[in-house]
Image (tube, rainbow over all chains, first blue to last red; front, side):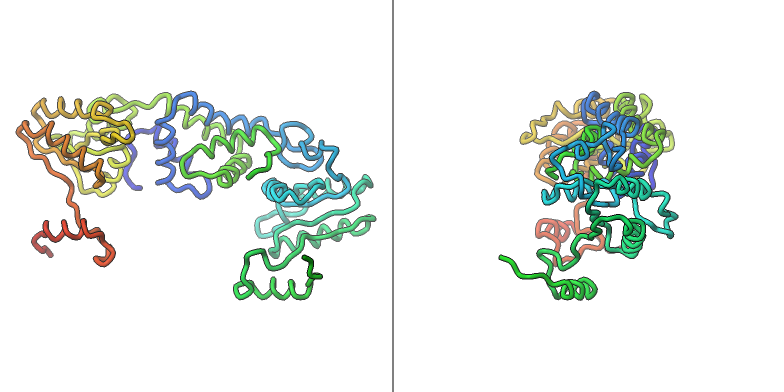
Length: 203
Length: 203
């Protein structure tokens, strides 16, 4: 889009939308014109939602997930198993695991992954807080649920070294061929591992 | 996404993003978490851009395009041909035509198209204002640049009836096979018309 927009206000709004990841200028224009057609109160609610989120959001002091209070609803829930901690990279991973409805423990959000290429070291993450949390003695199992990338494996190994002296089980989520995947199209590493770690057939 | 988000502020922000056309809840969450990582001032600029757009935007009193002043830059430009008016549905069409850099006349933005199914009649559009504009006597040609849908054709016909008594040329943009299209995949109506309206070959 090389031509100038006829309005600076519109141009600013389009620029702001286009800064979002995955939103190009064509989509940004479509979204800005959509907002123009909405009632004023709606647009004020829209704009203020993000300002409020950014200014007022807190992070759970226990697990570091996004929260409105000092403790998130999961850490506050006494019906959850507080002896099992699932270590994840981001809040999105918490939501993904919650959506499976297969996990009743608590979480620890690291805030990223060790990645020297991106300048992220262990001290940029909440790893020290995880070690403190484990040292309190309540936790019996730590599940490492990180990406299966090189950085993920490195971070798993780092966490393992930090935690192995505590009397607790350190596990990782199962790797293998996904449901609905065809063997033919599964990469060799995944397929090789899933054969090596084969499990008893259950009905 | 059926699980509850751990923060109401986040939930509200996600809801607001998800109200935008073409943005699902997964993308909305990704965008909200992206904003969370930006500096406060950035997020305030983001939210306020849309509120300012909605509250302060004006429409050009001549051609009805979005404008910061009473007259848009195109209508104010004395180097443009004010005797030729291109009638379009929306501001986006103005921008699309401007991007071609092939047009030096002015515009008239109707604000939509006659569509009884959507409850849009001639009086919901800026048609009367177009007739007044033509009646002033400066305009020598009106180009109808509307969609080639049933509603577009209906609207063209309605405009033609309103304008045919004035001493001016009424034209439509050329219909035909687009550049880069293959004949095999062109619909019969378009192909038929483009054969009927064949043009002298020029080099």
